[in-house]
Image 1 (cartoon, rainbow, N blue to C red):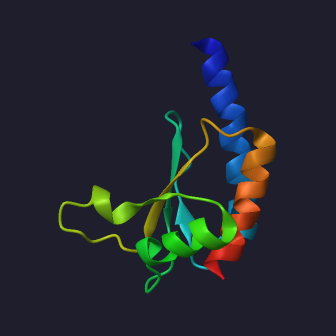
Image 2: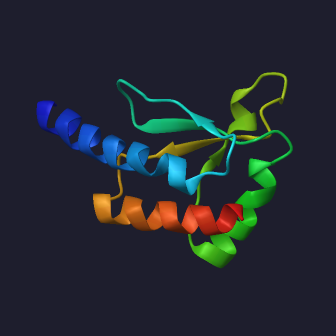
Image 3: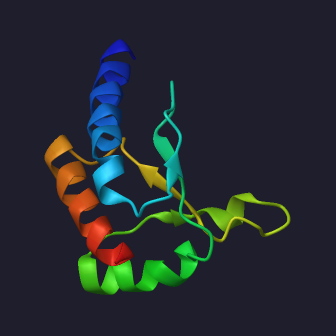
Length: 103
């Protein structure tokens, strides 16, 4: 368990270090103390669910649109990014691809 926590911490920190230069201006994100995901809030007017098909088809990446986690279906501009399974190199590449998909 301790090794998994150490590994996740490293991967989380790599992802967090890339957020400011990857996400559009005005975005916000969580800095989780545990778990396997970073919660991202994109600027108002962006729709993560609408971006997802293009992200998958054109950039080979996926994320979980956040509106599914809101009982009232708000949160169209939110997404959940996983850092637990990819390697740190894959996280760097995935964030580069996410940046392209969000343009």
